[in-house]
Structures are given as C-alpha cells and as structure tokens.
Amino acid sequence: MPRYRKPAGPAPRAGLTDVARAARVSIATVSRATNSPDLLDKDTMQRVKRAMEKLDYTPNRVARRLRQRTGPRHLIGLMVPEIENPHFAEIVRGVEDAAYEQAYAVMLCNSDNNDAKQQFYLDLLRAESVDGIIIPPIHDRDPSVLGLTGLPVVAIDRRLRGSSFDSVRVDNRLGARLAMEHLLARGHRAIAHIAGPRQNPTSMERLEAWRESLAAHRVDCPASLLWQGNNLRDGGVAGAEALLSLRKRPTAVFVCNCMMALGVLEVVNRMGLSVPGDVAVVGYDDPPWAQALRPALTAIRQPAREMGRMAVELLLRRLNSPGARPEHRILIPELMIRQSS
Image 1: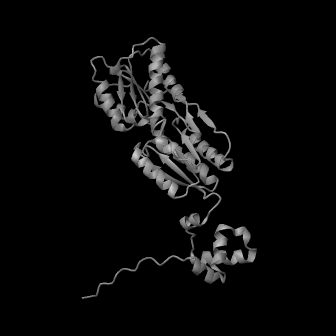
Image 2: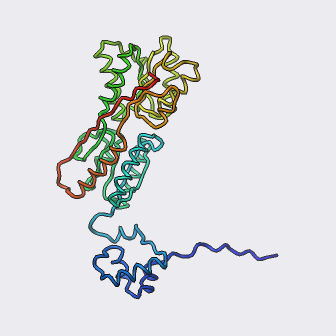
Image 3: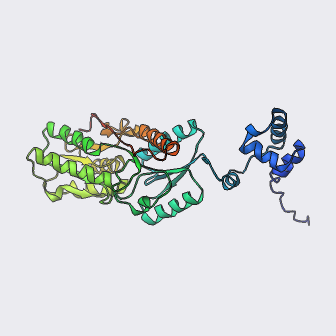
C-alpha cells in the first residue's frame, strides 16, 4: 500500500530577516523602510523595495502598531448594533469610503444591541490600539461608551447624553413628524405605531413624536395602538399580527424602521388585506428595495452614508485637534411618498 504523505502546507511567508538579506541591509533598515521611509536615501529604499516585491513581503500590521509608540495607527474602530439592517450598512459604507480616502482602515464590530457584547468589542478595539471609535450607543447614557476616556469617540446615529464626544445623527423627531403629518393629511386618525426597543434613543424620539403629532391634532392615542418592537423583521410581524387583529384595527401604521416595515407588509399580504386600501404603511429608513415593493413603500429617508462620512471627518478632526470643542451635527431626513400610503 502506498504510504500516507501529509499534504504540504503553504510556503512560509518572508520576514524582515529575509528582506534584509536580499537587500543587503540591516533589519533595522527594512523596518525604517516600512515605518519611516523618508529617513532612507533613494538608493537604499529602492533596494529594499525590490527585495520586498521579489519575496512578496507584506509588513505585519499588528507588529507595526505594537512598535509604534506615537502618531496615528491609521485604524478606526466602528461598532454597529444591527449589521443586517440596511440603514447601518449604509453608515458602514460611508465610514469605509471616507476612511479609505484618508488611508485609514476600519475594524467593524456588531453588538446586536447587547451590552455585554458591546463591552467585549470595545475592549477588543482598545487592545488593538485603534486611533478612535465610531459608535451608535445602545443607551442615551451608555456607561460603556461614556467610559471610553482618553480615546477619540464619535457617537453616530443615536443621542448620547452627558458626554463631551463629537456626534452626528439625524433629526428623528422631525422624521417621525413628517410621517405622521402625511398620514394625518390623508385623513387617517387611527394611526398605530410599531416602536423600537425602549432603551434605543432613536426609537424613543420617534415614539414621542408619534404621540405629540396625535396630540397636536387632538386625536386619541389609545395604548392598544402602540406595539413595542425590536427593530427586526420578526418584531414587525408580531406587531402587525397584534394590531391588525384588533376589533377596531388601525387604518394606518407608522413603523419605526425598515426591517419591521418588511414584517408588517408580510403580515398584511398573508391576511389578504390591501395597502393602502385597508391599511396604509409608512416606514422609517429607505432601503433600495423600498421602491421595488408593490406597492412601493412610503418611507423616511435618512442620509446614512453622509452620516458615516461626517463621523470620520469629526474623528480625524479630533485626532488633529484634541482640545477642540465638541461638535454636534444633526442632519435632516426626507419623506419619500409612494403608493403604500
């Protein structure tokens, strides 16, 4: 029988010693070529560069960060609470685009709105020596985020009270009022709301604006028309099943985010109801698929990608001017009227 031969593994990667030998320079010179190339003369730099290319050498980024005692590491930590949510995917895209333009890399983490998971990743980001962190706080007085002392932080998408951090978010109250004024103008009075988690600052701002809009028009706001969801599709499913099964069911539903709006439309179709004939639906966030639905979804559009770009701008400004006063930017949402309302 043929003898078993262990498959050969990948060839070992070239290291500093290999490059130094090929370029006929010291290891310290190779290190300077990757960290401080301006300190080397042109001829030496060219020899090291040719050796790196020949050996397919890639500098170890982690080792470089550990050796580097001062100056930026060119690494940004980004936390998102719901990675499957298209709104946060747009924010990530904006952050990554802006960071890449400035030669910064992004380390992405997902907290699932879980305090323990968020703390785990915050500890990891600090251990990785990131230059700063961009994060939507789980709570408006989030102790994990407020405890990030000595590190530049930008609170994005969600309000954070009691901090000196820079921030960028959208006017959630205005967005919710735009949705409600639209439904009220269409003659709806029994307008239900599927809200997000209670600890979520943006969810609570939208919920408060729902109540305030009804009160401003002297419309009753019974507790039966409020469903506390979870910002996920199944939260919209559960909310729609409960609200649309009421004896006096609502004629319209304002949904806190696009993922739950998707769940609402799923239930409406399953129950054989028509949109907007039996029930009008307005969502918050405006993902690309909102226009592909039939009927197309009326929604509040947030400038999510622009928010991500601004967060990077604020973070780099803080790195360059640590003593600058905190800057808080609030962007304006837009009502996209389509067939669902």
